[in-house]
Amino acid sequence: MSTGKHNVCLIDDDKVYQFTAKMILEATGLTSSIKTFFNGKEAIDFLCIPENQQEGSIPDVIFLDINMPIMNGWNFLEAFDQMKHELPKNIVIYVVSSSVDESDIQKSRSYPAVTDYVIKPINREKYRQLLSVLPQD
Image 1 (cartoon, one colour):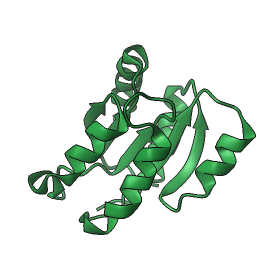
Image 2: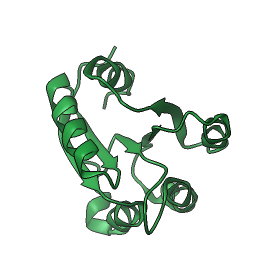
Image 3: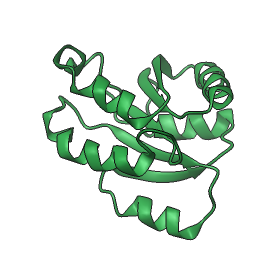
């Protein structure tokens, strides 16, 4: 089980969710940094900047919402799939949604980059569990 600290990325257009998720993630003691983006395009743009592709800037894990403006979670996954080979490490992606729709859950499983589908809300113990299985450098 990992006890290291991880770079986390939250991609969600809900400011309240971002704030509470950040507080809960910090409380796990398993994060070294938390970057937040309000839509998939902001996150893809960040990942595409060469200076951000240094190992220390790239997230270890992404918590990705589905329903967002500009670029939703599905569009992010399509774009990420095209560029992930350029990144210096594998990134674990959890699709995080309040949707319990079986078609969303099945669709998330069709993306090789997606590790799991997690239904909101997420408590500290669940975040701790999700972070504790991440590989350590």
